[in-house]
Amino acid sequence: YEDFIQTDASINPGNSGGALVNLRGELVGINTAIFSQSGGNIGIGFAIPINMAHEVMEQLIAHGRVERGVLGVQVQDLTPELAQAFSIPEQRGVVISAVVPGSAAEKAGLKTGDIIIAINGRAVDDSADVRNTIGLIRVGSRVELKILRDGKERIIQATIGEEQHAEVRGENLHPYLAGAILGDIGENSPLYERIKGVVVVDVAPGSRAWQAGLRKGDVITSANRRPISNLKQLRKIVKGKDALLLNIQRGNMALFLLLR
Image (tube, rainbow, N blue to C red; front, side, top):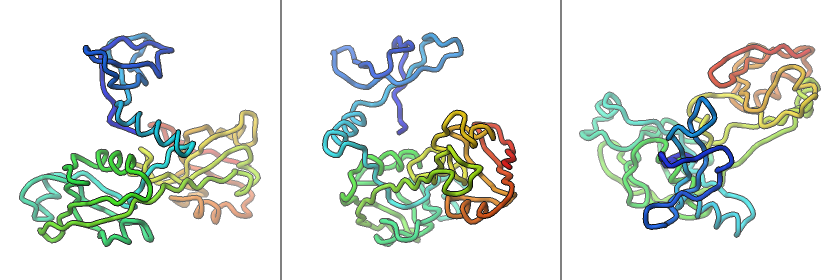
């Protein structure tokens, strides 16, 4: 989830989950994090908006988990240059750069190059806005998308699908990966449009994967010098290999790990 409320209200370690209220005593957010180099409050805090928290609460009560909706598209912000290239007089909306085969978007008839300008009657600001809006729509719900295609406005109706979290135990791919849980990068992940690869969901301390240097949050971008974008590709590359050379993205740092 994104779109945090930034506040200068005092939030200190241990306050996460506490209430952020306005001057009328109304609950407006749930305190979540602070920006600080010292670990103490310096007046830059972040809270989850209460409407988002309320939706999550209702889903947890009803289903025991959060069902994040997906449309099945990759979108990017519409720059002035792209707006000109698509012959759009106003810089508004986001452009669909890819449609996932078999997704809700494909079934609804969305195409690469379509410009999404509104969702359920509300104008969209950027790609993050689209991800958050779709993510909060309940799975199975109908959504109305206003798009531009070839310069003409169209209304597309789509049924929101559920995000699939493909995960696998590392030892099921290769003995050297034992102790790690690996997963595909979901459409709603902040990583989705920034990097291609397989994410390390968790690593058991002391396991073979841990000793080799893998850590939770790492993204494996290539294996044995071959780029990967999902678990299926990783499985194919590492099968039967005596050694694994993994290219890892860890935050802003890239490194190689040799597993043998």
